[in-house]
Length: 256
View 1 (cartoon, rainbow, N blue to C red):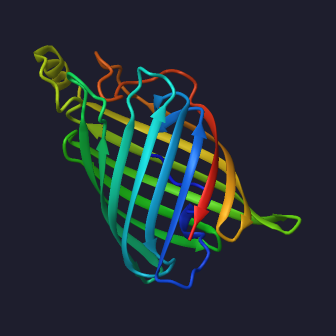
View 2 (cartoon, rainbow, N blue to C red):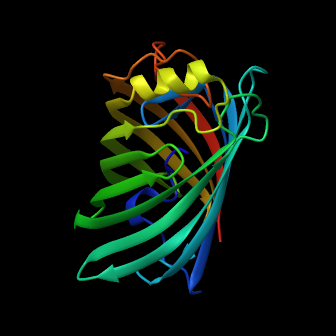
View 3 (tube, rainbow, N blue to C red):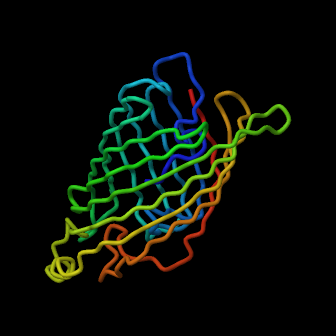
């Protein structure tokens, strides 16, 4: 699941009068890249999320989906939720993400779930840093990640806009690539090829707000891995992809 960019970059959100706020987008992307590794080519993505109004404590819930254009790549949808708590200028969060691949078959991974905890802080106005720890239970994968983002407000005529910069770096140690594998060869190979690799990426995007609650974004992103092994079989999307991981997207965004 990719980070939500534009309306939700590092707490740079408009204050609403209600205790809860929501946001959503529909996006075309030239590649689906997850933690630096390409999972699919051209895709349509959608996300919807509800969370406490910025600066307040409370639960958040959301869903995300990726539909690749290529028929050989599986549809994916994710459900997630957690709790945000503000303390001494820090935003602390704990949550869980479920990854689902309903078109999987054979030895392909059909689902997985991951717990996460994070702490973020605005260093100066519109610039923040976030540290997150993830643990995927089925893949037995431990992943620390550090990310940062900076927002520059500007305008086109009377239309408010923002220019957003973000970057991330992390390391993932995976012990069990194929939790649903029944083939003995695959299980043995995975046991011998436990993988630990670094990943990184960056995004530059701009958002134009046509109204208070509606806008559009365009962005360019890059993501890659360092030291990721090539596995014997691409199951559940895992394995090093060596193609160009520079990609772009356009999206329509809404908030309420």
